[in-house]
Image (tube, rainbow, N blue to C red):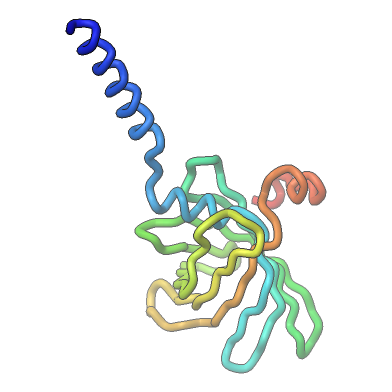
Length: 160
């Protein structure tokens, strides 16, 4: 009987340790799924932009990182690049662009449920301070930030 109790205790400890090790909060999961290269469009009241937005997570379990956004206006053909820092808190994605004092919230209709290529992220850019919608975005994940894309584009400290 003592051996049965000992074996049962060992099995119970193993099961509990696996259940505790697999915990990951929702913000970390969203940040992990966000990490990568997204392409699509951004629409304002009077302009539609083709965009590529790159999110780089600061570590596997980090809920924050840095990135940059390339926008090409269809009516004038000029391309711009803007760097930003981002973080996830309470299920919201916050952006702080280096050329603006305002924080932007990505309020999404459709959430990326995995880190798979082809996932969609649609919603609005919202001004943090006023709560007003700035633009609508429609994005699709094109690359993860694993070996291929990061190595091919030689990301450096200058991207931060």
